[in-house]
Image (cartoon, rainbow, N blue to C red):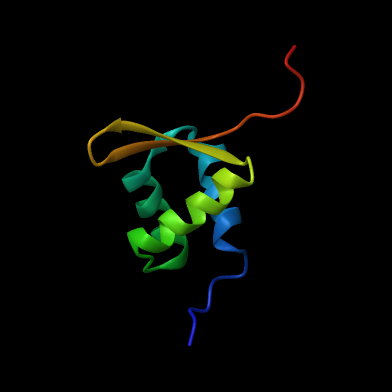
Length: 79
């Protein structure tokens, strides 16, 4: 059986956290999302981040070994 998530999809929760907090580390993001949903593994978070990155919603970059920066990709006018 799969997990039953909250009333909003976890991908949307990730985007909302990043909109509110700005760019944060993957470990900080995991804590924030766990605050909304309860238990989420680092593996589950990575799968969601990959889907969102491939979809052009966010960008994940390496800060140092074992630590990554997660930020939204800003779309719209470049004015």
